[in-house]
Length: 168
Image (cartoon, rainbow, N blue to C red):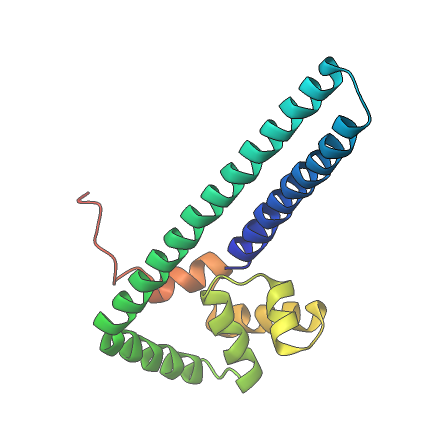
C-alpha cells in the first residue's frame, strides 16, 4: 500500500506542477498581451500553456484511474477476506500452535508472523519499535528453533500443503 500512496503523491505533485505552469503561463500571457509583446512570443507561450493543460489533464485522468483501481483492489481484498475468514483463522491458530511447539517466545512469534507476511527486517523493526539488529536476532532464533533454513523454508512449512500441486 505504501507504494500506492507514494505513487498517488507523485502523480499529485506532477499534476500540481502542470497546474502551476499553466497558471503562470496564463497570467504571463494576459500581462504580455497588454504590453504589446510580439505574436511569436505569445504563440510560444500559448503552446506551453496548452501542453501544460494537457499534462494536467493527463495526470488527473491517471490519478482517477489509480483511485478506481485501488478501490477495486480493496473491495477484492475485503471479499476474499470475508470468503476465507474461517480458513485464515484456522491457519492462524495452526501457526500459533506450531510456534508454541517450537518454543518461540512472544517476540519471536510476532517476528515469525511478520516474516510470513513478507515484511522486511527493517519494516518489522519499525512496527515493533525496535532495532533491525534485534529483529534479525529474533528471526535467527525462529529459524534455529524451527530447524528451518530461512524465510522461504518458514513460508513453505505452512503453505506447501495448502497450495495445489504442479501435477508432477
